[in-house]
Length: 104
Image (cartoon, rainbow, N blue to C red; front, side):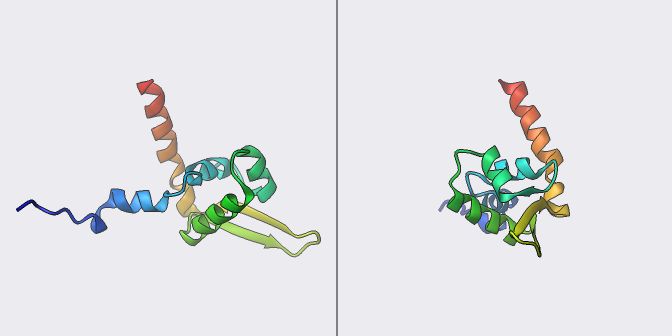
C-alpha cells in the first residue's frame, strides 16, 4: 500500500491557493511601490480584463494581502494598497525574480 500524502497541511499548497490566480502576483508587484487606483492597475496590466481584475482584487483583499480604501468624493475614488502582510511578500518576490535571472 502506498503512503498517502496529506496536502491539506502542506505550506506550499497553501501558498499556491493564496496566489492561485494568473494575475495575483503581477497585481502585487504593481502595488509594491505605492497605492494605485483601479485604472492605474488596469493600464499597467493591459492583458487583464476589467472583470478578472475586479475578481482578483476582491480575492487579494479577502486574503488580507491588499486593502481597499474608498474616498467620500465625487466622482468616487478607490485606492488599493498592500497591507503589512502583503508588503512582507516583497522581499520574497524580489528573491524569486533574482533567482530566475540567475537561471536564464
